[in-house]
Length: 531
Image (cartoon, rainbow, N blue to C red; front, side, top):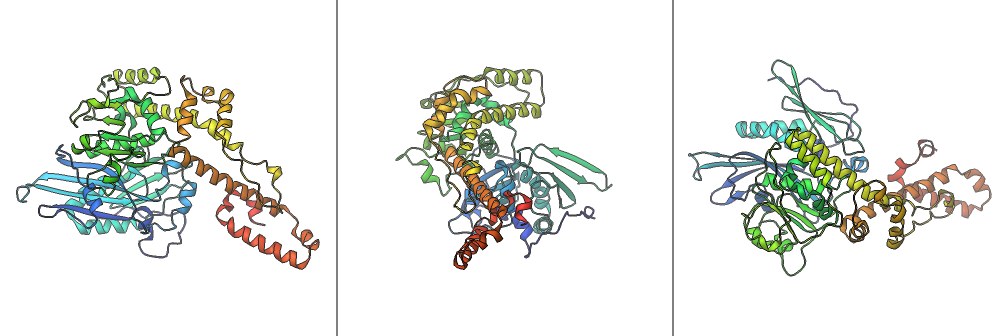
């Protein structure tokens, strides 16, 4: 069958080796089959077990979910340097995970009397460093059903198509042909708002366009629907990097809920570990379930009933039942005590002794309830909830951004012939004093113990990760301003005033400066970088 029409690329990319383009999107593709004698037959045990549901839900038909696992120590990612430029310019929510891989799974289980087990069970898994959940699930919907019918030749052809894709690039429209279909990703920009449209080429050459809201976000309202009376408390738990476990009936609901939790503090990056789907065979199983120490700052999604007993000591447990349709009303449930959670069959709800710092926001609950009663579209409900979380996180983070910006030395203190001045250290009490007049009350109507919430946050991995990143950005900005000041100097005049030895020393220092700032020249104004 004829493929899609030839697509023009904006520019040629200097990729030197075969599969470089493929590697900028995917690390590899795995096919995982179930062998009655051997169990899941694949070399990599972790990927093998994570690619199959381990619950009693009997996922007949096709199921999609994702997992996340650590990159083995000493191993190298196939992505190489091709995504360094993308990472630098990409919004926080789309940056790749340096020490982790994502696995995007399309699992098929159907009855087959010809097989000894009575079922055909196989998973097609895309392994990538990119957190593009919606994108890769959409890609799998296109290629997995065809693969199960046509086997390896189809998969090989799909891989060749992917190897012709341009690399992910912020600010550009990407046209990605795949087996007769064109996926169009429009402008990945510096804010977490992206649209991906799938354009299908049918036999009659007419185009059908399917638009998905983002390349990476899950449906927040659908995921939080079973527990949406507690969304504000869940936001606090994620913000503070608390140990959380999601117990769900299937890997799809488990992984979607964990991803929803992680994304609810966007644009703040969740800096602790999270596992959308976690099994007893995971290499970190003992580390994360030990009772000899406090549970780690991690969010786990599980389906195996064994975890109901193994993780009883965890401080915060979310029990998710079968996710209702968006049109059904969720029942209001009180927060339950942990001692009431004895099995995975316990009623859905949030089991914790945690007391939120902020007063409950009844308005958002009423707004969402009204939407259900009026049969508001799920996409609209999702947009309302995402905007609520965004505004809540921004209200919390703006005072921190404002204070950290004040740690930057004044530009007039930067001398071209001296080392750049140092950033002032972060002083917790000094920051707390700024909250009296410039705290979250300026942008949020919520009342409560904001001070207590900030104190707890400043001890969390999320603050540590955020501040490290901000400090790195400000240090780069200082280096860029220092180099800019050097570029504005009259070097000829400077050389005339110094001896030959001093001049050579100056040239060597300038050379060292240029090398050290090579990666941040993008910060400097164009006219100075061209001098």
